[in-house]
Image 1 (cartoon, rainbow, N blue to C red):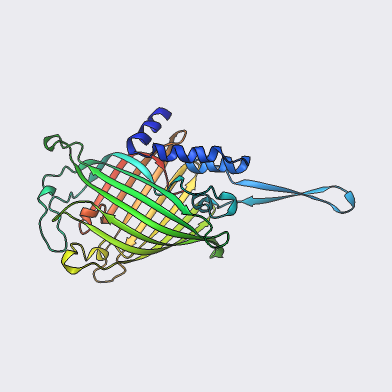
Image 2: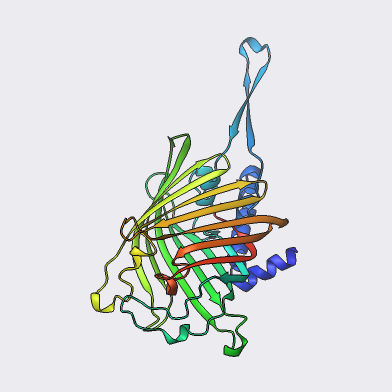
Amino acid sequence: MKRAAFALMLATGVGAAYGDTLEACKRIVDDARRLACYDEVLGRVAPPADTLTMEQGSGGTGSRVKARETRGASLSLRWELAPEHKRGTFLFRPYKPVYMLPLRWSDSPNRNPRGFTERNTPEGQGLKPVEAKFQISFKVKLLESVVGDNGDLWFGFTQQANWQVYDKGDSAPFRESVYEPEFMAVWRTDIPVLGLRWRMVSLGFNHQSNGKTEPASRSWNRIYAEFGLEGENFALLVKPWVRVPEEEGNDDNRDIQDYIGRGEVTGIWKRGGHVVSLGLRHSLRAHPSRGAAKLDWAFPIRGYFKGHLQVFTGYGETLIDYNHRQTVFGIGVSLAQWL
């Protein structure tokens, strides 16, 4: 099974990225930090740790042991928020989930995709309702501790592909590949909010495109803020955004925010090797009210190799389908999760 996981990493193009990160972990001298680095990169869920401090009693009468639980630090590990979690710049780290879904079924394949101008896209004809889907995602820290010991600049990249692998009559084409580079500045906050810890805030610029020409071209730019809150075995990401306007003559999906939405909330639960995430997007408009929901469940198979189940319903499951509503089920394997 470990060989299968390694083969999948190579197939998705992230093997070198994770290899570099593991090499960075190997160079950490402190034992606790090195172990935390390995656990974070490989997605291991460790039990909450206790930090023991020995305090000498007055008059030399003995010692007192005080246990302090260190819980809810997943965001800090993933984004290297605390000084003890920082591992330097220009090393590849996990970002969004990395998965391969050999079976992905839609109840309503978009056989006639249209942009804002209502032009048909002939290449959408004849789609099979069952296809394969995969996603790779990584991030790289470009600058560290820009203001004192806080503030890091990151570059992230995510690619999602939908592959008509079972359509042998058309030579099994890739239906769409969506490319999503982004830059984000991340600051540590660590403030108590409603029983959680507000761990981080980030400001980012995001470009998303399917790399196609007219009439199938879909692309947009947005500026966003993201707030990360955390509790025991739980994290909450709140992400509103604003679309960057384009020239009207070149804007083939100018209504994309009315379908994909103007913000997203993602809840993530981790327990016993299981990772469940629920993402909700909405247009933030009452008329019309549109959006989407996506549920991902990664469950242990063996070691760090996880099974992966995905359910999506709403608009924008992929960029060519930004204004098409469907419900999608997918099953496969994953190598990295949100946390």
